[in-house]
Every structure is written in structure tokens, then in C-alpha cells.
Image (cartoon, rainbow, N blue to C red; front, side):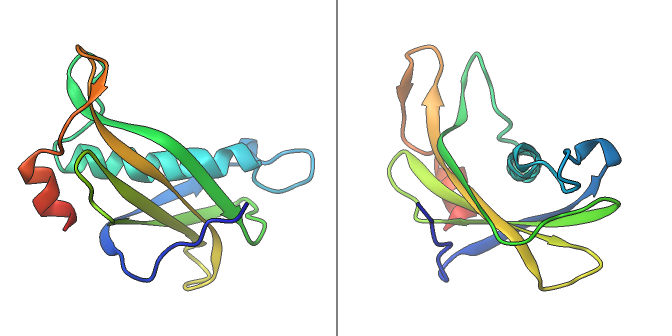
Length: 139
């Protein structure tokens, strides 16, 4: 199944991630599991930058699904530019989208992915309403 990143989204964060020699697999390209790691780095860095780092004992974000569309093979060495976007805020969740490109090939998307991010209370083990301050940042 292929998910499509929507045109209507808000850019919230960018970061550079080094590709390491050890990230490559026997096929000579960055292993597919690392693409998910790069998506996670961008998402968690953004959440941390807004004061919403995952909080295992309290309230905060968790993801309830994740996907990645692979378009081109990333190969080390180099850096990945991850661009993080948000869209579709609901009562308890919002969508995150991330594009991955090489910094030495601006505009060439190698992969794109995302996740549904749910606001969660670990004490009650239930979804809760997005805090107003988060809703303001993602709208």
C-alpha cells in the first residue's frame, strides 16, 4: 500500500542526519530500517524542540502507525535532509509527514513517510484531547 503525502501540510522542522557506513546493508545501500530511524529522528527532534518530548510516565505523543515510501536508494557517505510537516489535527491526533533527500541533491526526494501522532495519557492508558498549545502550533 502506498500512502500519499498531502499537498496541504505545514512545514514545522528541518534537520540533517549523517549517513554512516554502518547504516548500509549487504545490498550496498542504506538499510530500509534506517529510513524509519531517520523519520523517527526528525519527528522526535521536532517534538522535543516544541517541549513535547515523549513522556513514558505522563501525557504526550505516541504514534499509532508509521509508513515509508521508498523512491531511490540512499548510499553513504552523505547527509540526509529531513523535512517534517504536520496536517489534519483532530481531537486527539494529528498527522506527521517527513521527506528525505540528500543534502547534495536538493529537491530529489529519496523517501517520504509519516505517522499518525496521538496525544496519550500513560496513567489512564487512553487518548486525550490535544493541548491547546500543541493545536496552535500545528494549525
